[in-house]
Image 1 (cartoon, helix red, strand yellow):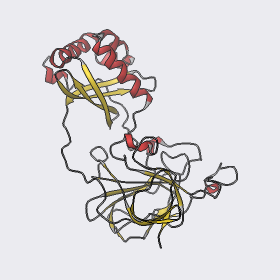
Image 2 (cartoon, one colour):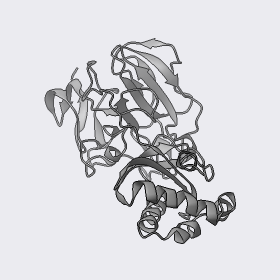
Image 3 (cartoon, rainbow, N blue to C red):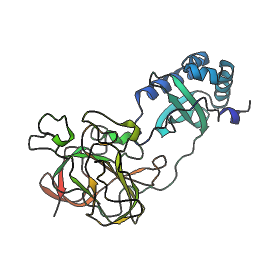
Image 4 (cartoon, helix red, strand yellow):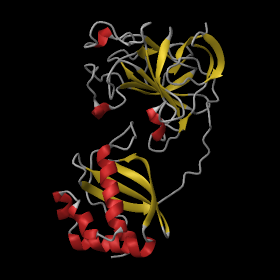
Length: 323
């Protein structure tokens, strides 16, 4: 079998994953096993790490043929970097002794390998703005607290995801620093729930989702990760995502043009969200599989009771619009 044919074999298909592009535990374990066994030339161990169905789909002789061709043409793996999920596969920029490939690995919940393929690695040479060009206001009124925001993993867990690396998760806290009253068992206990979410700038609506149920606090909905969401496109072709809105609260639809300060919906707890909050980020293109996050600076706001101009909030900041 030719190398080009072998490199495009799909061992099996997995469920598509989108939005949150952090490498999960199953992918991390499966890819680490693949690299270890591959570099030690233990191809039988890679086959043993396949799920039962994958072993049927690609028998040991074909697996060994694929891996031997890979090894003979590219040598051992020297470095591997997680990029994103694409159609259920974790995609890694994989540097070999003799070249670079994109290795894609799918895994089930038990970290058994359910799919793997290799393809040429294409470096993204597109120019992405380091920050927003369009002036932005905060997408809400009143004082909110930045739960995740900043440039390091300690400040912002989103940084490991290419398309949402500059995202904010923002909540409403009381003076004691709590985001809810009573026992926090219902969405109505949370101060952010039902608060208006507004357009940060003049823009066109390119996506509006409205029908996803709000979660019970503490539960997640990974099937509809963004939940009820609005995506805006600015005149400078920046794409703004506002996610986890309240069910049936979205007031805009695709194709609408909105003005800065116009209400888009209400803060909710839909999608992959454990409590009512707003997820906000800017990305370079609409397609999350091709997008790169853009750092957002707000033109004027009050941060911890001090007026700031052209400021990008970080974890722990208390922020409100400078009216």
